[in-house]
Amino acid sequence: MALEVRGLSCGYRGREVVRDVSLTLEEGRVLCLLGPNGAGKTTFFKTILGLLPSLGGSILLDGEDLLPWPAARRAQALGYVPQAREPLFSFRARDVVLMGRTCRLGLFASPSGKDRRLAEEALEAVGARHLGERPVTELSGGERQLVLLARALAQEPRFLVLDEPTTSLDFGKQLLVLRRIEQMGRRGMGVLVSTHFPEHAFLCAHQVLGFHGGGHLSPGPPEEVLTPRNLKTLYGVEVDIVRLGGKHGDRRVCVPRQG
Ligand SMILES: Nc1ncnc2c1ncn2[C@@H]1O[C@H](COP(=O)(O)OP(=O)(O)OP(=O)(O)O)[C@@H](O)[C@H]1O
Image 1 (cartoon, helix red, strand yellow):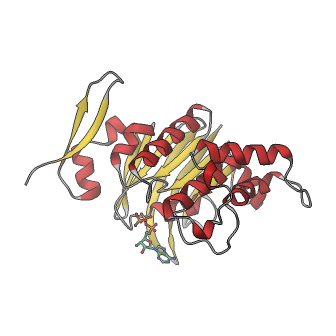
Image 2 (image 1 turned 180 degrees about the horizontal axis):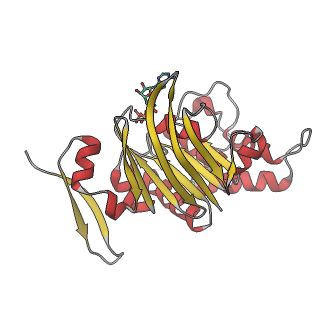
Image 3 (image 1 turned 30 degrees about the vertical axis):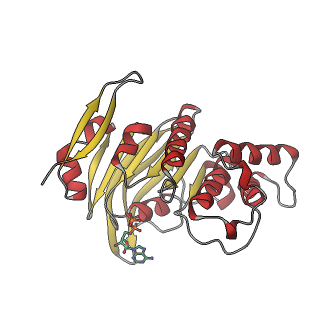
């Protein structure tokens, strides 16, 4: 069971932003997408999700072309948490999470007890059960981000696309969300996640893909892709990767060079 991207090019009205990307993401694996502002991370995700037409290449799930799939079938396979933005309607957070179950309901069906239980569990999993009764228009950016993540969990997709899920979260919530991402992988979900923090890849990812101004680094394990040289290519800064031993095992951190 795998999501395969073959020679995918993405962009807008003939302007290519991302060119000729190929990768395979198996269920149970986490891929972290890195790159500077404007490198094309969101564009790439939206193309995979079918929200933008591709400029070339193909996207396959278990060898089947995703393009002709109806929206509900696609939503059962691929969940999406976009970058946080202002909500339009003042639904309760609990109901927004329950909406994640919509793609699993029949045409005129209402949510069942099981759907409500899964929605509650999803809120609990992201540490946001206390927000259930609050209108989403009155939540902070980080709180809204957690509610959207819970909605995607309630959807129970096989693959989940998370666009900068840790942006706007405090330090503790960032670590909670990274732990959840890692757990989602262990429970068999395939996850594509973008972040502006390379260290997040060390904490939760099996593979890293890096975009930089029209080009990209070949996908591979974080320990191989996240070298000082590649980080310079991605972000134009000099950093060292420092390995820290400890009672919780090997850890790697990025340390800026002086000067
Ligand atoms: N609707 C659009 N029409 C035309 N160009 C767009 C559109 N949306 C984004 N772009 C351009 O495509 C490029 C890639 O944008 P994208 O949002 O994919 O980058 P990103 O890597 O997600 O950036 P960030 O880290 O800042 O969120 C940018 O140059 C951006 O200006």
